[in-house]
Length: 150
Image (cartoon, rainbow, N blue to C red):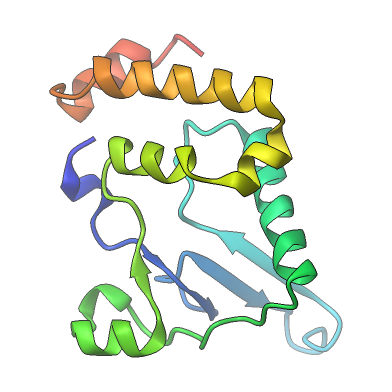
Protein backbone atom coordinates (compact mmCIF):
# COMPACT_ATOMS: atom_id res chain seq x y z
CA UNK A 1 0.00 0.00 0.00
CA UNK A 2 1.20 3.49 -0.69
CA UNK A 3 1.59 6.00 2.14
CA UNK A 4 -1.32 8.06 0.78
CA UNK A 5 -3.60 5.05 1.30
CA UNK A 6 -2.79 5.16 5.02
CA UNK A 7 -2.66 8.94 5.45
CA UNK A 8 -4.93 10.65 7.91
CA UNK A 9 -5.84 7.70 10.14
CA UNK A 10 -5.28 8.52 13.78
CA UNK A 11 -5.66 6.60 17.02
CA UNK A 12 -8.61 8.45 18.57
CA UNK A 13 -12.29 8.21 19.38
CA UNK A 14 -15.22 10.58 19.23
CA UNK A 15 -18.98 10.75 19.57
CA UNK A 16 -20.55 11.08 16.13
CA UNK A 17 -17.08 11.92 14.77
CA UNK A 18 -16.80 10.45 11.29
CA UNK A 19 -13.06 11.22 11.25
CA UNK A 20 -12.22 9.23 14.39
CA UNK A 21 -10.87 5.68 14.15
CA UNK A 22 -13.43 4.65 16.77
CA UNK A 23 -16.76 6.40 16.44
CA UNK A 24 -19.40 6.20 19.15
CA UNK A 25 -22.78 6.53 17.47
CA UNK A 26 -25.27 7.65 20.08
CA UNK A 27 -28.77 6.26 20.03
CA UNK A 28 -31.58 7.89 18.12
CA UNK A 29 -33.69 10.60 19.74
CA UNK A 30 -35.42 9.15 22.78
CA UNK A 31 -33.06 6.14 22.88
CA UNK A 32 -29.79 7.91 23.70
CA UNK A 33 -29.70 6.92 27.38
CA UNK A 34 -30.22 3.24 26.48
CA UNK A 35 -28.67 2.64 23.07
CA UNK A 36 -25.46 3.32 21.18
CA UNK A 37 -23.17 1.66 18.67
CA UNK A 38 -19.42 1.64 18.29
CA UNK A 39 -17.99 1.82 14.79
CA UNK A 40 -14.38 0.77 14.27
CA UNK A 41 -13.36 2.61 11.13
CA UNK A 42 -9.64 1.87 10.82
CA UNK A 43 -9.83 -1.76 9.66
CA UNK A 44 -8.91 -2.79 6.14
CA UNK A 45 -11.74 -4.37 4.18
CA UNK A 46 -9.54 -7.41 3.55
CA UNK A 47 -9.13 -8.11 7.26
CA UNK A 48 -10.43 -11.35 8.72
CA UNK A 49 -13.52 -10.20 10.66
CA UNK A 50 -13.17 -12.96 13.26
CA UNK A 51 -9.58 -11.99 14.06
CA UNK A 52 -10.52 -8.31 14.18
CA UNK A 53 -13.38 -8.92 16.61
CA UNK A 54 -11.18 -11.16 18.75
CA UNK A 55 -8.39 -8.55 18.82
CA UNK A 56 -10.82 -5.74 19.73
CA UNK A 57 -12.35 -7.83 22.53
CA UNK A 58 -8.89 -8.78 23.84
CA UNK A 59 -7.76 -5.14 23.80
CA UNK A 60 -10.94 -4.00 25.53
CA UNK A 61 -10.67 -6.63 28.24
CA UNK A 62 -7.00 -5.80 28.79
CA UNK A 63 -7.90 -2.13 29.15
CA UNK A 64 -10.60 -2.94 31.68
CA UNK A 65 -8.26 -5.27 33.61
CA UNK A 66 -5.73 -2.43 33.80
CA UNK A 67 -8.48 0.03 34.82
CA UNK A 68 -7.62 2.27 31.89
CA UNK A 69 -9.93 5.13 30.99
CA UNK A 70 -10.61 6.61 27.60
CA UNK A 71 -8.26 9.27 26.32
CA UNK A 72 -9.76 12.71 25.65
CA UNK A 73 -12.45 12.70 22.98
CA UNK A 74 -11.44 13.88 19.53
CA UNK A 75 -13.62 16.60 18.03
CA UNK A 76 -13.09 17.20 14.33
CA UNK A 77 -10.53 15.76 11.93
CA UNK A 78 -7.17 15.00 13.57
CA UNK A 79 -5.50 15.12 10.14
CA UNK A 80 -6.06 18.89 10.17
CA UNK A 81 -4.68 19.48 13.68
CA UNK A 82 -1.22 20.92 14.34
CA UNK A 83 1.32 18.48 15.84
CA UNK A 84 1.08 20.27 19.21
CA UNK A 85 -2.62 19.51 19.54
CA UNK A 86 -2.10 15.88 18.53
CA UNK A 87 0.60 15.53 21.17
CA UNK A 88 -1.46 17.34 23.81
CA UNK A 89 -4.37 14.92 23.34
CA UNK A 90 -2.12 11.87 22.95
CA UNK A 91 -3.40 11.22 19.43
CA UNK A 92 -0.96 9.19 17.32
CA UNK A 93 -1.07 8.29 13.66
CA UNK A 94 -1.80 4.63 13.01
CA UNK A 95 0.75 2.64 10.97
CA UNK A 96 1.19 4.08 7.49
CA UNK A 97 2.37 0.94 5.72
CA UNK A 98 1.93 -2.81 5.83
CA UNK A 99 5.50 -3.14 7.09
CA UNK A 100 4.91 -0.70 9.96
CA UNK A 101 1.64 -2.44 10.89
CA UNK A 102 3.45 -5.79 10.89
CA UNK A 103 6.15 -4.37 13.20
CA UNK A 104 3.47 -3.28 15.68
CA UNK A 105 1.75 -6.66 15.45
CA UNK A 106 5.07 -8.46 15.93
CA UNK A 107 5.69 -6.63 19.20
CA UNK A 108 2.22 -7.19 20.66
CA UNK A 109 2.29 -9.51 23.65
CA UNK A 110 -1.45 -8.90 24.03
CA UNK A 111 -2.24 -10.33 20.59
CA UNK A 112 0.19 -13.21 21.07
CA UNK A 113 -1.63 -14.17 24.24
CA UNK A 114 -5.10 -13.65 22.74
CA UNK A 115 -4.42 -15.57 19.52
CA UNK A 116 -2.17 -18.26 20.89
CA UNK A 117 1.33 -18.91 19.60
CA UNK A 118 0.38 -21.13 16.65
CA UNK A 119 -2.20 -18.76 15.12
CA UNK A 120 -0.09 -15.69 15.94
CA UNK A 121 3.02 -17.14 14.26
CA UNK A 122 1.05 -18.31 11.20
CA UNK A 123 -0.66 -14.93 10.82
CA UNK A 124 2.67 -13.13 11.16
CA UNK A 125 4.37 -15.38 8.60
CA UNK A 126 1.60 -14.88 6.01
CA UNK A 127 1.52 -11.09 6.50
CA UNK A 128 5.32 -10.92 6.33
CA UNK A 129 5.33 -12.84 3.05
CA UNK A 130 2.59 -10.59 1.63
CA UNK A 131 4.41 -7.45 2.77
CA UNK A 132 7.60 -8.59 1.05
CA UNK A 133 5.83 -9.80 -2.09
CA UNK A 134 3.92 -6.54 -2.56
CA UNK A 135 6.54 -4.08 -1.27
CA UNK A 136 7.00 -2.32 -4.61
CA UNK A 137 3.61 -3.07 -6.17
CA UNK A 138 0.97 -0.45 -6.98
CA UNK A 139 -2.26 -0.78 -4.89
CA UNK A 140 -4.39 -1.35 -8.01
CA UNK A 141 -2.10 -4.21 -9.04
CA UNK A 142 -2.34 -5.70 -5.54
CA UNK A 143 -6.14 -5.60 -5.76
CA UNK A 144 -6.08 -7.22 -9.21
CA UNK A 145 -3.71 -9.96 -8.02
CA UNK A 146 -5.61 -10.81 -4.86
CA UNK A 147 -9.24 -9.90 -5.58
CA UNK A 148 -10.49 -13.47 -6.07
CA UNK A 149 -7.91 -15.27 -3.96
CA UNK A 150 -9.78 -15.19 -0.64
